[in-house]
Amino acid sequence: MRIAMISEHASPLAVLGEEDAGGQNTHVAELAAALVGEGHDVRVYTRRDSATLPEAVSTLDGYQVCHVPAGPPRRVPKDELLPYMGEFGSWLADTWRRGDWTPEVAHAHFWMSGLATVHAGRRTGVPTVLTYHALGTVKRRHQGARDTSPPGRIGYERALGRAVDRVVVQCEDEVRELVRMGVPRSRMALVPSGVNQAVFRPDGPVAPRDPARPRILTVGRLVERKGFLDVVRALPAVPDAECVLVGGPPADLLPADSFARRLHTLAESCGVADRMKLVGAVPREEMARWYRSADVLVAAPWYEPFGLTPLEGMACGVPVVGTNVGGIADTVVDGLTGDLVPPRDPRALGTAIRRLLTDKLRQFAYATAALDRIRSRYSWKRCAEQLGAVYTTLATVARPAPAVA
Ligand code: UDP
Image 1 (cartoon, rainbow, N blue to C red):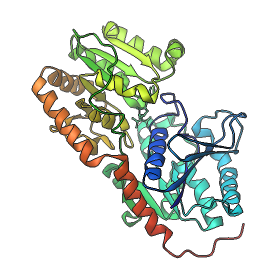
Image 2: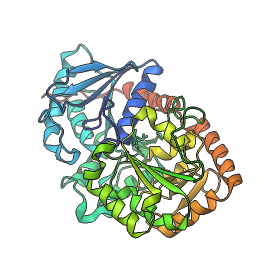
Image 3: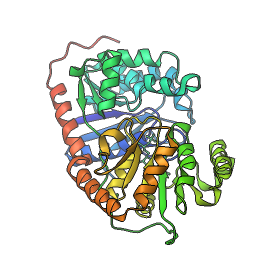
Image 4: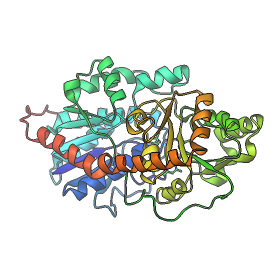
């Protein structure tokens, strides 16, 4: 089947860890590769953010990445890309209409991609699917006035839920949120992300570590909602352990990063600065080494649309202490594959980490159960199969004649 994936700001080719590059980039790259593995013909459309990028490149994984000339040919923060989505959608429609490659289904990632995709779908008759990855209602609830989303995001997301042919949701929490927004449950298909188990596995090289100290690992973009400040506040309750944070800008740019400086100041005032280590961005292919070096992975976001890092840690055989939010509440089974604590509660977090680090038997039991869970439920192959079934039902449904541009 010919499948278009539209991911306006999150390119599968981007370097991860920086502010707008994280789980969605990984998701699109892995899903595209898995769909190719199922025999599909896949093209990923992402915004051209550099004057020098060629229009289309092929990846080693067998899909093509097409760089759409919409908006300025430079990096623009994702929240400022809305004005270019009409141009993006028109470019898609023109390209698909030219007829040398017209998709049988178009799957948009993130609401802005959804706008461009619906625009193109209406003009070409191509059925549309949307994965939100994150919801404006949740962001507004947690970030209030600091939410930099364009005004109108929530209204657009609500309308998109009815405009696309199918909404792909990633966790139960997202289902509840969308139902509250008025998106009918019957339009949704629940298909969680996977994890690359050839890369994230228990055996393999390990990043250097101090054998005398238990290691807590936490991973993510250096943004407040990832809860890293709560992890620092939890550290006094876990004497002796070192905490390694992977993510953010490359290591040489960390001293200039305002959030990294905030973390450092807090670590000093909590008396844990000597046990807190910021590594900066790590290339995707080196992530497994860092997971394997840890005794526990901590994922402490205030909210999390899905959360790939707990899956990656579990696939490497590392027990997880996570907050009971979003996708983490589905992927980590409390008391069986890890521990769940309330978000923004450093005391509960510290207690759970200390209890786990002092109980080798529990660590082993969690890690073993987590591996079983990953192997039986969270492969990209399974995700691609489930999505393939969704796409097939849409592509075979008769469509009204497309609107004339
Ligand atoms: N990641 C990476 N290098 C880094 C930091 C993160 O490759 O330095 C990857 C990480 O392995 C995961 C993704 O970025 O695949 C983060 O995804 P998650 O869903 O946890 O968070 P998001 O960025 O989507 O909020």
